[in-house]
Amino acid sequence: MNAATQTNVDAAEIARFSELAARWWDPEGEMRALHLLNPLRLDYIDQRAPLDGKRVLDVGCGGGLLAEAMARRGARVTAIDAAEAPLNVARLHRLESGVDVDYRLATVEAIAAADPQPYDRVTCLEMIEHVPDPASVVAACAQVLAPGGRLFFSTINRTPRAYLMAVIGAEYLLRWLPRGTHDYANFIRPSELDAWARAEGLLLVDVQGVGYRPITRTFRLSRDVGVNYMATFAAGGDRTDESIRARA
Image 1 (cartoon, rainbow, N blue to C red):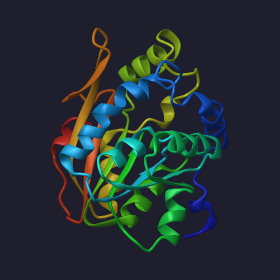
Image 2 (image 1 turned 60 degrees about the vertical axis):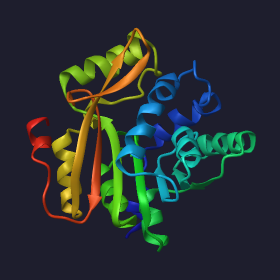
Image 3 (image 1 turned 180 degrees about the vertical axis):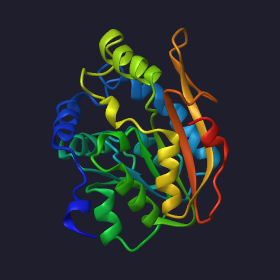
């Protein structure tokens, strides 16, 4: 693996999330959407592939919201990010919470090249749309996944409705996120994610849309993948769930 694939990062994205780092754990700050979404993300993972006692790699961990939550469920979590500032916040919060997470400054490509021990679970949530080469991330995640392991992605579909809701709605109207957080051109269709995963020998076992209930301020799973969606892949196999093509 060459140096380019080990540094699959966008400097502007690193700077953007580094600027937000100090407010990562503020449930009413710029990351409040992640705070609201985190319980659904955690349950989605744990219900499909139990976390207790498993070795987990959290790719693009940011300030550690998901990493700490998975560790509380009994997982042995290694959490990586390409930005130093959010990792420093995650490490500081670890001191306050006492939750044991191994935080590392690294890309998943670098971990795949250097770490010989496979992981039972790999999570890559709200990250893959922020890198120049998402297929490289999928390939590296597959490389570090143990036989029989599960790989989880969540991202945003490239549809006009996703642009209206994730960019215009979330960034400009609701102001959940700073303007410029998302680039519509980098959104990923489920069929594209599936194709990259199949190329690495991964089997799609589940895909669900994510919807928001404004009255209760909660997120829910849905069959509608037109905006946000989560997907589960298994190591091994040469089939894919045809339903992803129907809903791509």
